[in-house]
View 1 (cartoon, rainbow, N blue to C red):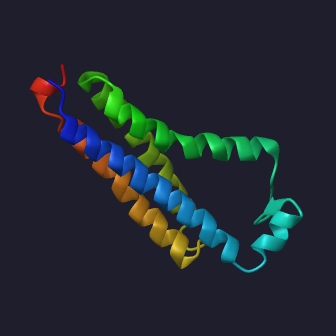
View 2 (view 1 turned 60 degrees about the vertical axis):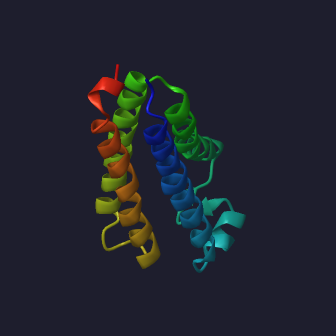
Length: 136
């Protein structure tokens, strides 16, 4: 028997945690001094804005949406495994970004980064604690 409550909880964590954090972070970046001027000439904080960069951003941005959908539709065993794997990878990338930008990032980006680690950690925790009889 499938655990719909847990599936909904995981889906909401993917949607709110990542999509909200990503959108808010991106929007606030536009308000930083000189970022708009850089974007108009094709760069952001010294990084050229290329088609490859935009494609990478699009792919990374879609992962939480795909995971939210899969959290509702996959069978329990596959669901648990997918959420643990993608959650651990997301946590790892979040930690790397946070440590790399320690002391260099603005206060709001550091805050979003720290809060953003809570969501994949919760996803991994809920998936890990998935009731054994449900994970068949």
